[in-house]
Length: 409
Image (cartoon, rainbow, N blue to C red; front, side, top):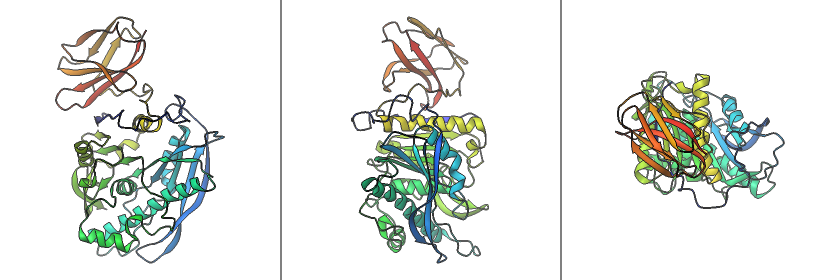
């Protein structure tokens, strides 16, 4: 699987605060905890379009025997086109993030249970999305209320992340990015009002906030990417570039091949975020008409999830991620000798001109040059001893093509 990665690395966009107490250089990145689960926790109550009232539940995952008392939380929502799926579907992702030290929850949200003939129109589905956003906001407030009272779940309420897959990611994106300072069309304003306003109507604990620290967007979309402004949280996105279910750019989301609602997908979300200075990373799966193809193979899943950890780590720990165990090689690169105390050779598979950057672990570029020929020779003798990252990027569009670890003796 070849991945095209577009990034805005904002290592210094995180507030300058002390490192999080639970960051130890391994947790949240390369740790491998066993996991405890608590299933079926009630966090709210809501009524569907079809008039069915039911409690909303979540499943909670945490590192076994965890001594940390103030942990970042990831809340995930399942996919299924707003007509199917369940929180069980997200258990594998919850388990993965919990093994790395995160507290994780997978939540219920309301599914469409109205008539399917005629197919629901865009107004009906917009109402469905807003109902689901109300449910996710209730789950955020549930954990904030707990932190302010019994503190059963030991959550750092400044580090709550949301996201999901497909429809679940649409929910997460709107939860994190559609706020009361956004201008919406009159029909959306009416739908919001009917569903409890900006806080929703899925729980009564509205004295607690529902803002988030970041978003994990796996093949999701927004109604309009113009919702994004400079105060919005960081966004990590992955999307197939010819996705026929949720559009990569502007297009219709479909159910069973039938267009249902116009949305703006990950590429436009990423562009809008870049334009206002929001920390954003987009991994594009090129020439792929599949939906969420990257989670269909073990290699793809591992690469994507490790990259998401790299994205989250600076937000949680206020420092660059440790050197990645996953190296992206859209363009083959050989680095030698490595470790080195003096001269470094970087050999690429092509003589086409690329940009070579060497960064320290704060994300600061300490050396940059254009490649000349297949082999570039760089004197690193004046570099401080330690670990560095070598990145090769396209000279045309700054796309990351390859990455390797460098150890300077």
